Length: 207
Image: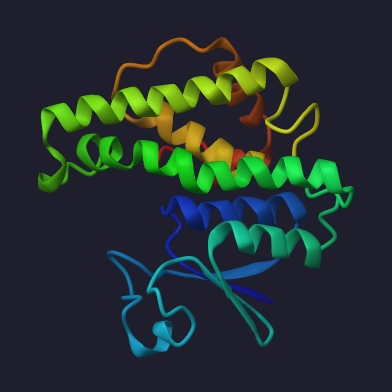
């Protein structure tokens, strides 16, 4: 059975849990990370030298990096409906997954640490204001894309890209800052909430 190492409140672990729900993959999860077993132990570092969750073990195969795990699971467990084989359609999914992991994640990092985690190192007012503006700009990019597709991030069907994007949308709405009204984004949030996997692991009140 697939083994998932990482605490369920982690946004990156939740990507993997949601993907498993979508593909009906049985798994066992172990709590690792802040507040649980330390990923800095020799046991964990042997699996991921970066001391980060999640990590999966599928038989004797070990993999880390959450978006890479999503792609592996889709390829391994018949997730063609989520991760199309056709080159252009797959590239579109990959594009938005990579954008989420790099540009979008960087845009919300400071604001999230300041407003949700209340980190003492992230309380500079000017830096926070700049971070909120940058995050809003990225969410506007996302809203424009959703407005053009009318449904999901890559088109008219749910895909693997909607898992990391959907969790980032959850983080946006759950963080206490001013939220400009983006109708396509709000509609997308409600659309995702119809999916059982998202109700379990996405919109669960633990951004």
